[in-house]
Length: 512
Image (cartoon, rainbow, N blue to C red; front, top):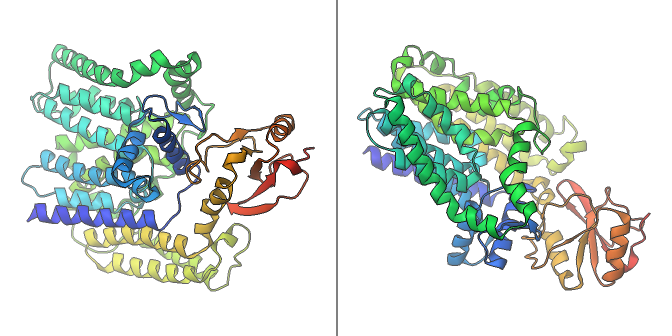
């Protein structure tokens, strides 16, 4: 019976994630960039040297792009099919969390509760539905934790741990060590039968050999055939800069801690659940999950470059912990999670009813009538959260809120504001004559959407723009209207990423 319920949970979360993908456009700059990299892999047939707009791309490892291209072998080049790779990884994370619960607490039936709790985190659903790397990395982390748990029980598992490390590197690079090494190094704290130090050293050496051998299948041919600049970027610059600072997403150390009320909604808002943790430290699995989740938060807080979605691979640990608290907490209804739902309802209702003008940044929400419906949904979710038993109430609150948000996206101007399809189709018709972008930064936002087969020329200054226009008199220049050196008005204007993007025929360009 429990397996049937688990399959229903997996089917349900798969449908929710697929609906979320269908209800929002391909989001710049991350999703558009990653599909453009996958598109260039499709064009080149080269799974080794990643490129973005024709230039080397060293910030990520190739697994996501390879999986997208494998999907395209079955479906043909399809945006929707490609965007299901990330959600499929998230569904697999839910299944892996349930299986880990079964290993941690055999016979106690916590796997369904752990899966439902994970599915009830809006942050997990939002980032799990995205075309990003964190859900894939989460699978590697789950595999690594499962291997370490077996080792900590006195069994073998070092080869499996090496396989998990290799998978994680292929998914997102050596960052998997940040997630797994603290669990390995603290084995004597949580493991019932930890290996002796010498045995652990030999085992970890075997794991490294397995991981390095598998990663070498990609890394060695890449390095042997790459330029010196590519090798330096891949092996050192991009990883070191994320730790020390200087790349995108530099945040203060307290950034992730400040986000915890959002990251843990709705489960973390239940005082009864927190009380359920009392006395649970004696459980080895609780100690493991606490170390897993806690060290992930601390280490990423210490790293300069960080984003909320970097914590996605630790969400299974949090779900497993809350499944323990749920089994130990006193029965009762109600949760402080109703407070943010009521605040969202009040704010959205005020905008939807015209009490707060939809001006400035809120203008993207026009027409505002869907916000009234969103307010009603939030109010209903708050009511259900208050009256239903703890597990279904919190799951409905998390899943319902995410679907309601996506309902607002698809029914208001938010969808069109971040949908680059019209701009891409306009540019695709000019590819044969040449395309150039007049802004300083371009992240290949249009390459996949327009199915471009040649790179867009980058012209970051007036001199390079003039030179390109002279060489391509029939070409087309595009870029953000407010951030380029052009004097003349654009021939066409498209709204994209919340800004006006213009198209200028090369023959009309007269830079300042």
